[in-house]
Length: 151
Image (cartoon, helix red, strand yellow):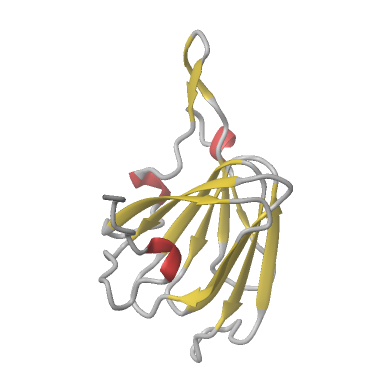
């Protein structure tokens, strides 16, 4: 895969936000793959946890802020709007907000100290969340808590 096909674009508003386009690569008849994150992207320094998140039409993950973990969110199906607010006092873009409406597969970086929310568009959205730290039960927002299996 060429670097051109996975071009990264800065997102206006916050100095270190990045969006990475995720083109489809054929795997065979009727099959393809999209690489959400690779080592050469240099976006996460370590791996902590991966989650698949499904948002119903209009569903929203409320604004959340990681104090010590960077996250990469990949929209892998549907449409979504991403919103960020830089809450880092030492950041050159402290206090600024940014947003991005995505209608095709894309990965976005959420640096620690930046508040983040995502809203599904006209249909359901499927997202992959990759984080440098694993969540613990106390910090976990409701959409990420495991619900017990029905008995």
